[in-house]
Amino acid sequence: MKFSLWPNASRPATDIVAAARAADDAGWFGVWIADHYMPNTGDTSFAPGDTHEAWGLLPAIAVTTRRVRIGTLVSPTSIHHPAVLANRAATIDHLSGGRMVLGLGAGWQVNEHAAYGIELEPPGPRVTRFSEAIRIVRSLLTEDATTFAGDVYTITDAPCDPKPIQERLPILVGTSSPRMLRITARHADEWNTWGTPQSAAGARARLVEACERVGRDPATVRCSVNAMVDLDGETPAPGRPHVAGSAEQLVEAMAAYAEAGFDEFNLPDANLGDTFAERSDRIARFKAEVADRLG
Image 1: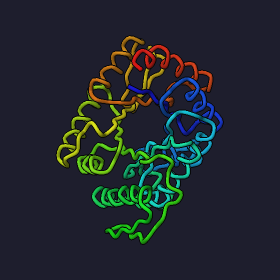
Image 2 (image 1 turned 45 degrees about the vertical axis):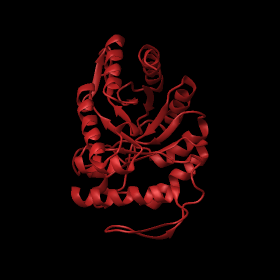
Image 3 (image 1 turned 180 degrees about the vertical axis):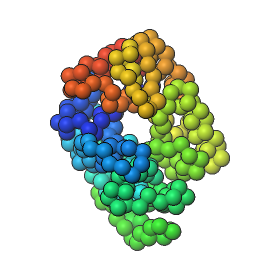
Image 4 (image 1 turned 120 degrees about the horizontal axis):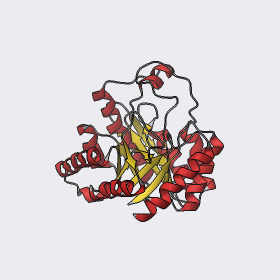
């Protein structure tokens, strides 16, 4: 199993870029950035807090790293037009020398949509928008010109040039709902979820079922999982799935993810310390004491 780093977008921009560069030097597999505009409150209310914009950070990460994959985890199609997503991703693929992964989702964070006056449609229409967007993005990234007429989007002889360096720039989908999983099975290269080893295994079983329903080999979908990591009780992680314990216990947890069919574990740094030095130390500990024993 591969291990990737997920720096929190609330950090100073220079810290985020430095963390990505350090991950690149240390042999991490990838670096992910969440695509949000403000801290989540679970409703329409606003809570103050810095949130650097993902698509502004990615070019800086692309040109200051050499090896790690980079991408969004994930960009909401409720906010971004598919033509903008495709063209951004292709350009960053060039900046990075062919290391971009385009993470997509249907959108969910209520307060950022409310604050900016962006409609968060009901689930049905929102997923329809996503279904059309992912097909348009794939076509733009691969075809000479794209024409598409759907319920949401109309695209006419649209280019996306230059094409990515990668022959097939990976599209990742972050989702858990049945309809979204079927769309993932039809159109995505990768899939991401949150979860403990047990809950993530259940989520992947539902992805496998979705693949089987559309006639796709589940082994052709790369699977990644995120969880907060509590190092020896030093870094409590409320509000999100998390794994905790000694290095040995964390190795066992990571092995359980791998056994469940996951190819990649993404380590968020949101709970790993208030300072860059604290986070760097805990990230290095996880790499040396856990990840390197499974890589």
